[in-house]
Image 1: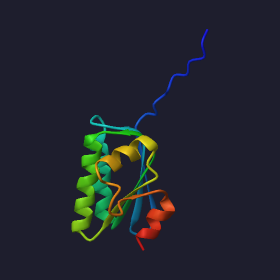
Image 2 (image 1 turned 90 degrees about the vertical axis):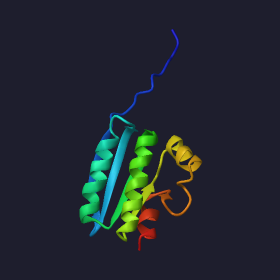
Image 3 (image 1 turned 180 degrees about the vertical axis):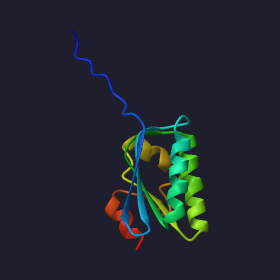
Length: 122
């Protein structure tokens, strides 16, 4: 019998927490795709109502498709128009490769860690 490991995918989950006044973190876990991208969009809309800064933790995001990216890009544009800021941090390898391929790692949107993302907002 061979030792085969079955990769398990974490279920999609969003967690929100305030990091400092006016700054909220949204943690994305699992796969961010068409089936759940509306949940992220709703979370981003709620956060933008009360916060000038939104940081998205992608460390436990295992996959992101075009609908997830579209939700992030839309929120970034809307935050910029309001004088706010959106940043992504700690993307997993596969997610980072995709963000890099489409050019989102340029221009101060993606950071290696929460500390870097927070410091960039000062």
